Amino acid sequence: MSTPIHIVGGGMAGSEAAWQIAEAGQPVVLHEMRPVTGTFAHQTDGLAELVCSNSFRSDDSEQNAVGLLHWEMRAAGGLIMHTADRHSLPAGGALAVDREAFSEEVTERLNAHPNVTIERGEITGLPPESWGSTIIATGPLTSQALAQEILAATGEDALAFFDAIAPIVYADSVDMEKAWFQSRYDKGETEEDRTAYLNCPIDRQQYEAFLDALLAAEKTEFKDWEQDTPYFEGCLPVEVMAERGRETLRYGPMKPVGLTNPHNPTVKAHAIVQLRRDNALGTLFNIVGFQTKMKYAAQTQVLRMIPGLENAEFARLGGIHRNTFINSPRLLDEQLRMKSRPDLRFAGQITGVEGYVESAAMGLLAGRLAAAEALGNALRPPPPTTAMGALVTHITGGAEAKTFQPMNVNFGLFPAVEGLKGGRRGRKDRYKAYTDRAKQDFTAWLGQHAAA
Ligand SMILES: Cc1cc2nc3c(=O)[nH]c(=O)nc-3n(C[C@H](O)[C@H](O)[C@H](O)COP(=O)(O)OP(=O)(O)OC[C@H]3O[C@@H](n4cnc5c(N)ncnc54)[C@H](O)[C@@H]3O)c2cc1C
Image (cartoon, rainbow, N blue to C red; front, side, top):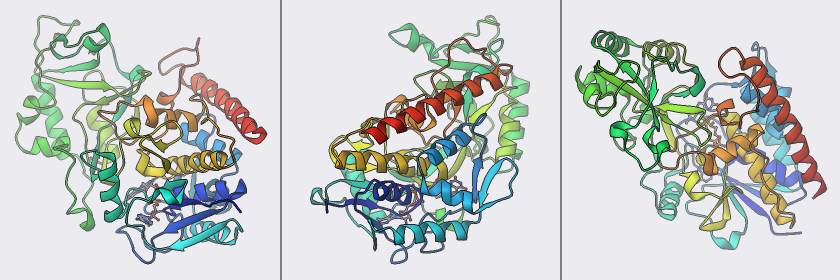
């Protein structure tokens, strides 16, 4: 029998990776620390435990990017999706599951697989090279000892922190009759640099109304176990800054300096909200400095008060929880391997994807890539026209490394299909074109895989 591939972490990603490797005929050792060592959020010793909601979100594979990811994972024989389908609950167009039955069956199927060995116990350091091919899938609540070693090996400033994430807007939903492209003081060597930001001007009255709404909006409360975790490098939620004084934001992320509104050049804005490009395609922009813990409904309402964002569509809303993720665009190659230690792959939320489905998808991919490598048939990841490919392309290079933040799958990550109408009106046809193309390309990728 060949050397086993090791996986650290038996959550959404690790369980799926183990299944893919075992199904490819390779031996695998899955290391899960529970129940020997627990986390703040997990309640059981089951594999693939859902720590919070029981929803896998939309199951619409024609009009929704996460639904498309479901489709691809089913096509690839994913354990997580097949088990979710067997334990689904009525939830409208969403896929919700009976969490206990789901986790129990994942655990049983892996336990019963002849190629899988499950070892319970915390891995307290970076796995040694003598282990050979290893996948680290320890998730947002990676144990402290391992997190420290990952931090030392990656040389990044922070790994675990309060993750206050800023909302991301689809560029084509911004009203360009009000907003404009310009970097502060026209800084930059190239035209692209000088026009890197989208700016939304606010007058005094709008600013005061916006501030009132921001301060009054409903916020997510911290859980007890989150109290000791610091914010990331002064990355304060926008409402926390606003609480410090009514002018704080005008001297912070909303400062109206170094910019001239071409729609109204003689009037100086009282405040300006800037949006920064979030992907290489230029289809997504994050609202600079607007990390927030406002509840989702309140967030949409408050942010749409910003001139230019009245009809904004959000690829991701802001949020806050403890998280652990590496700077994948800088640290990983397209195979999800650490560039400085190619024997180590990363998968799941620790790679900077966000959500159960995305985490399991990166587990599926890491498992397949590791198994193919072990069999001497190295494979490329699926193309960026597929949901899985768009996500892995984003985290391993498409995203800006300097401002890298966790990402959900969304159509903004997909390369455009030429010749289709932009804006809201063309959205249905556009999404259908994306998902048709993705299904075709993903099927072709699976075909290559089978032939290898
Ligand atoms: C509080 C909280 C709430 C969340 N709510 C949602 C939600 O509602 N919906 C959603 O889609 N996503 C949610 N997420 C994100 C969600 O956790 C992830 O999307 C998903 O579970 C990540 O999958 P994963 O496999 O990367 O990590 P996990 O599923 O967390 O699995 C990691 C596993 O690694 C184990 N482990 C950790 N360290 C070690 C070690 N050193 N040695 C051995 N084993 C180790 C853990 O015990 C765990 O079983 C939430 C996250 C948190 C922290």
